[in-house]
Length: 241
Figure 1 (cartoon, one colour):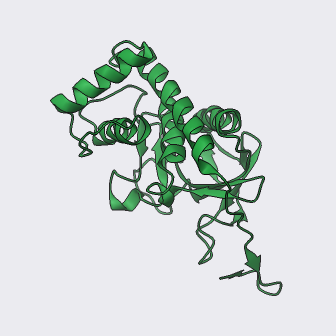
Figure 2 (tube, helix red, strand yellow):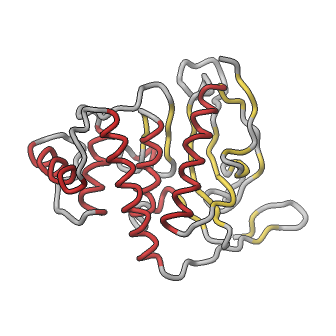
Figure 3 (cartoon, helix red, strand yellow):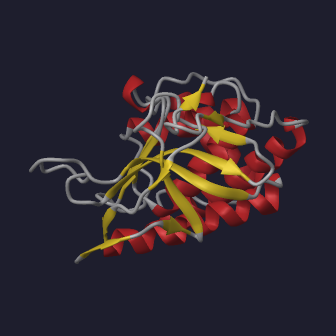
């Protein structure tokens, strides 16, 4: 498919927050990345769901999307080089608050709720606990189909985080599918009335239920959000820290 340029997803402007020191997670410059058209359509559907569910379940209205980019320079073979991968850094909300991916330890409910929605649309989602390189952004691409893979560390550690942090059940969080994880996932499915997640429709149903529960938990526990109002130099445009 051909590449196109986009400057928004779900009607929310895209900002690149990696060009200026101090912009990460709080500010950015408008950008219009080249993106493969099929992947762009998948991103549009995904972010439409993210925006809708953040508003519905967490009471958060997305105003802008902060990204580390889509494309990569050079002639590499990665999906970034093919314009089929996206790095999500943060959301700015209409009340002046924000959410940043590196705050997973402080706001696990919101993080995992968003991750669950991303996984409903993309087979590859790399997150905070996957490795150190992904602690400051979500990477997602359409290089694999949407289905649960017990051999995939990113899938397993996501479910372990969900069981531990959303449903408050003690479990090892090592990214390895073993008897304990298998048993706790079965128990969670049973409680939610969802069949085996080897079936993709059940996997998506589980992710939908997780997203709802996590975002409702976020709404119940957030309280008063800190309003971030970054100041910028009127001459050079640099963020004043």
